[in-house]
Image (tube, rainbow, N blue to C red; front, side, top):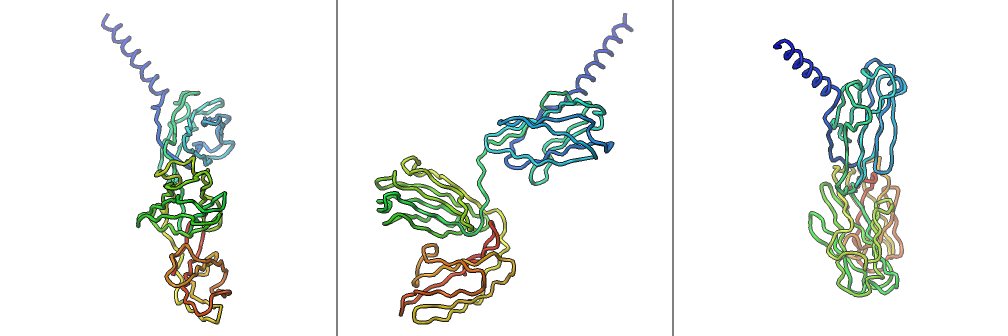
Length: 322
């Protein structure tokens, strides 16, 4: 009787071990943006028809390793998306197969055991994104205010809040004005409609990057919530673009010749901004030049001007204005 009980306990323990060895702990992580699915074969001859599914909110995709020892597949987990990683088996030599998931920084989010220890059709890992991602934008951006009727914003305005403070922008008259802004390293810019006037349905705004690509385009302002940020951009990359130096200006009656040292041969172009002395940077006239010189015409005679030059090196990298 004692021996029989011992045998039953041993068999039960063996069944429990088999059950747990055939299952893996289900885990999940919030991760937004790019993740990398690496398929691995320890023998080096591919997955021998075994497969894995990645089930997104928008549909399923099936992946395998046709040959060799590994392959890395980039996947995108967008806002409000969920990605389930599901071993499907279906082939032979599952003990040679495993997979790994890493984030964009190379951190391992999940590393599976051998495929023969996984339960086919069951989710081993889930990645989800529940956080709105703030886009990375460094350097020059343009804020364009638009009025569809053409009589200005009628007392409405909006704020741009950065680490250094809050600046209020409006459109006094006409149908359009463009402001030049700069988002510096470790800065975040929040674009906030504030209302305060009338005919909000005529008002809207657009945010563009240094190349003119639209980053955000608002609906009619009567559809916006006053005091709430509609768009945010941040700069998390240290700029390497060199600030122009040694600017020289030679003036004529109604023109000016500018020159400067760029400090780098790898820039894309220079943004020259100018207006009468004391103007606010971002509100002046602009010219884009592709050399270290600029020739400006149609200036007012007997008038003092300020000139600023910003070097643009890439979409996310521009120098401070000098």
